[in-house]
Length: 260
Image 1 (spheres, rainbow, N blue to C red):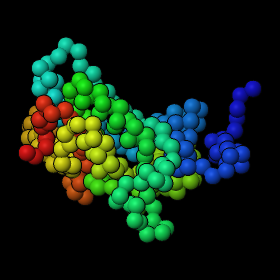
Image 2: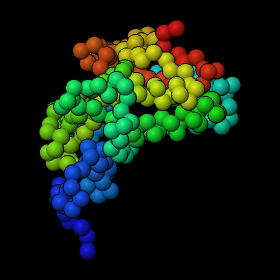
Image 3: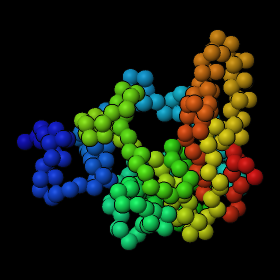
Image 4: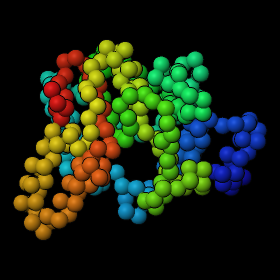
């Protein structure tokens, strides 16, 4: 017999049976439950969804990230076999109290410390492969440069903020990335970590303004659309400084788009 319980009912049952649930477990269920998870049961992207990602705003974003990847491939002497791996949501587990970094070990009582052990685990696995085989990790998301306390958990529905505990499986959940913590993992593996950049500076360094100019000349009827997309991607009031760009790489790589 098919399980017709809502995701909220499933979560309530698990709480009643096993007690308090970690935020990592709640987010995992809400986002990736096989039947009712946000990413498995709906198409959340685009104007008709809950949010729009950078690649959907303009072809320029994908073109410039592609340029970054091609340049990386060239620096690796253009190998015939080249692994390009794009990652999506993962699973997390509670962090042991004795494992907190020094930045938050002396936090005041009541302060919140967010951590994703899944992110650190992925960085360790990928970083180990890259340290052994050469390459780079590029991550673009909103986050902060140094590990710190503070709550960044947020929910989005219909392009507006929502209650993170409201309608699990029907709203997007996210939190800011601790790029400082990821950088520490990468450094311990022997990788070089570039100074955290903003999406504005990274895309600017790859030539997004010049590309927008070329597109406008070739498509005069789309000038306003191209200008609006450029503003959305790089303006400080839009995604330009909110989104950060992280890069960790083997020593033989000089990633483009980052200041030297």
